[in-house]
Length: 390
Image (cartoon, rainbow, N blue to C red; front, side, top):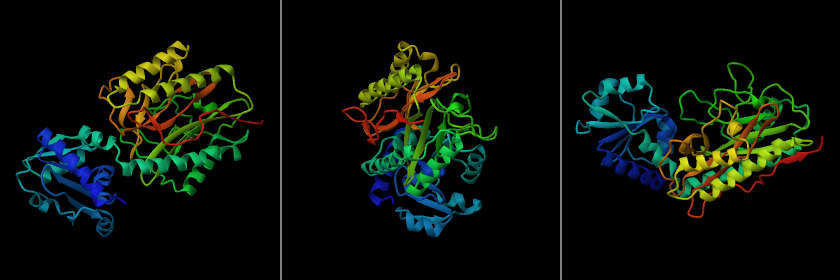
């Protein structure tokens, strides 16, 4: 549970940035942002003035919010007619996270707070959340450890003839038994994810998901992840799952083969390991994320794999790493166009992968913490492909 000290530290950081931007207050309505600062995921909005004490306005459940939230001022959500009277008119400039606020909600609060100007504080909030506290890092290590323990059990059940769906279901069952909370939250519009991916032959399908491997899925309504296709001998099996415990996400990919592996796929895997290690060593404060992506793409190109790096040829994802925390797609992103320097204690999932048409998908993923010594890995699960007897 979020402590009062941890909550206050986060709120103070936001207040400093609000003052720097010239905003008088923040009105946070996205549940996971409210949770980050207030420690409760009840149906509520959080008001944080640039100077002064925060206030949580709760629609439901007020009693549970009072049990969970360390903020002192917790009130029932007022009616629309009473809403403006709760806030002094001196708060003329109000920050909202425009990246995640629907127009309908923006319109509601514009009417509820007449005469106020609303400004975008999306990047402020995302930047604060990208740097993890000691408290958060411990939760992330726990998530990574539990996820790794489930991955370690894969050889006990993986067999030729299983459907991708069967493999995925077994992973999901074991993760849930370990305490996986089920939600894999994503901030980006039009993106969604269920637990993770278990793909083999279906892995070479394109799809909507903004990642290197999509999977065939079960229908056109759910075109992502495991399919009804069966696991074949001598085909790579890619398992890419998110561990979510206490809200915090660790992301991991491992490869399994029943039988032997095509030499071209083994080559691609070796290149993926080299890219991961290059990125890991460079993950220090001040390094530019775009430069790491370009360096990774260059290594792939030199290895003769540029056209299939990070996805289907022509449908490649344009990153090699993404921030994780309470959401799967946090800052920073190791991608072209992301020129903000890395910061100490940001947490990044690094996932160099290849999709080779006609042969399969291959790659690796681990979650690292940015440090002065380079990326610190959150789990000790071996990277090597696990070969099983046919």
